[in-house]
Image (cartoon, helix red, strand yellow):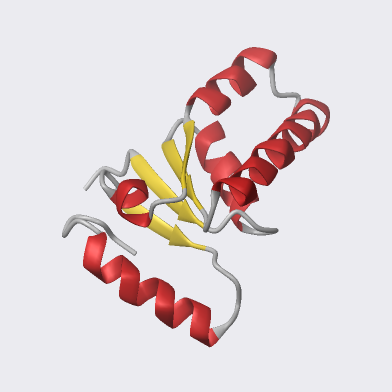
Length: 115
């Protein structure tokens, strides 16, 4: 199977970096988090991260523009995984949160989605 549509669940310390790196490498990435306010924070972190990519990886503005085009955001889990070939989970390291997340995910993820 070819993975093209990736959902990253969680936009915290690890998740936002995974999402940005994945988008930078040409994948369509949907960033899922619990609400729009948290997703807005992720967008701000992506802008900061893009500066690091310019400096450290010598990324061009064209590469970064494409990276941002590859990113989308959704606070609705069902919508966030609707087209996902692959889901990368980066929710907080709390058993209760993870169990709740996977119970919800199991109800809405397409059969094709690999977790």
